[in-house]
Image (cartoon, rainbow, N blue to C red; front, side, top):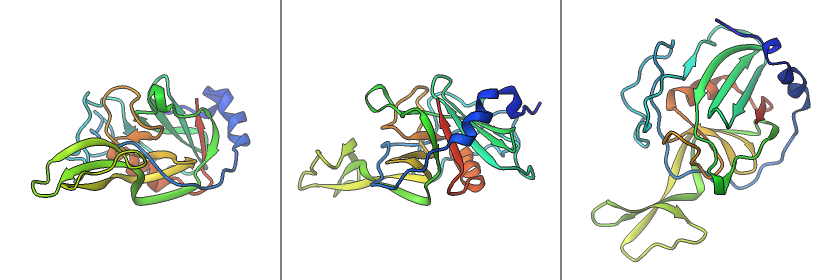
Length: 210
């Protein structure tokens, strides 16, 4: 059953108070992944693309029912529930399971808007080291600002498909979901849900983080 923004009265006020932010260097979590929801209009997927493993816990939460629905988009992120809600014209049309920032890299609460979309984005800060000869991962949590590769290692930046930046280096994108808040501040989403969010937001779409 679809709900309207009147069921969440604080959203009506918050949607009018979105802040404009300037762009800056991008960063993000080191891994990402997804699993399709149960009983939703999005087809069940069997892989998360070439980069990201499936979530640690099966996803029976995420769904999308917004195709063909008209109205201004609005994204609400609830860190306590670890969910992202997508509204069109005040109607709830999609919910995505997420993994937000960890305790040491918390996703900042506030009212924002999408300031950049990047379909095939890669992190400028985080990634992995792999052995040059074997291709095996030697360090899967690299911060290139402080970690330096050994002579036998090569650096690969973390892929962040469907990146939707809303403040600083933080945005929504395909990401690994371990079942708790674990990112460097970004909002990790299942791949099929990041695709739907990416297709339905524009630069300027409001994003509310609570």
